[in-house]
Image (cartoon, rainbow, N blue to C red):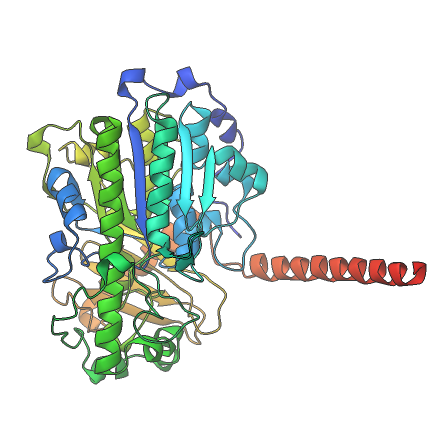
Length: 501
């Protein structure tokens, strides 16, 4: 990075604190479970107004807790977003996505599970980790680390039956609760692979979105309408580099015919309902174990999902469908008057780590870039709450265009900075909530465009500076060298063995 985001010298020494320094009294130490779904946009919940998608458990958590209607990821791809969730930092700062070096130790050692574990919490992880950290750092983060991958989702059991990854995550969550209930407070992160498509299996339905057996047939009798924003003119209005992007390529995998769209949509929604069922089972076990009244539950998604809208698939770009995700926080200790509310403040994935630490009474590392959401959940409205956020996508991929921008309460500015010349978007969310008009060339918005360009540059400088591709190229060269050396050693050992024989 050309410009450091902050002077880190001496800051990380402050993290080496004792439990008595970081934790409130034992009576104030709740258990925390953080559920994370994959490819789950903000409006794919019953409580968010979906006409037929069944999410009764999440709806109940929203009714008894607080739902954030303006929750965004700062980078819409699983690797970078999950790194942000762990570290409380923007991608421009933690510098992790697909194809980059692992998260730097100074950040992973200050991740929320590492801080909590050092402060006396039992920490666990189940499901899709999605990031790379040094093994020594990962071992310091979790008492229990149980990754579960897809490929395939349906896993053969000893008795020959098939069990879905989501259900296995629920099984292991219950085992974790049984192991640590009533001893010390625990924080468990359950990160589902669902509702992510099985990319390697492009057969519509059960091949592409394999669902748990418990939801077989669900939504089969519901007529499926064409997606919103499906007018071909909307897709055609995009520049050629977006028409040629992965957003369009994967559209033809999943959504390009009415039959394929309906089949995949039903299957995708079954996976979401399957997640809801698992969360319900875990909550019921909390009650059975006698710890439900002191267990905070957080639910969110790692990025949005186009679902065929605009003629796109996937996520990765600057539209609301890509960046906006659900967030529900349920605190059973809150008074009834504080429950069932919808918070309109802008929340970010950078906020999850400081919020978890704050609920635990732990000291939040000073370099975190997110904010604690607990005051909002408790019914307060901070006067100095953010009015905008930096957002970006920096993965090195020839068919996923890089971009950076600002999402404010009214305007969205995006700059696809590697195009020649850079291609910009400006949307007025108040007048054009579907972001169909690009106002960059509208003289009436020239001052707003200038202001948002300046704001984007200022936030970029604060979080890390201009994009530096050498981070990835140098890492790839080093990895290539390491692989070549390993191959040479194997070849030499084989030749030596042959000579001995």
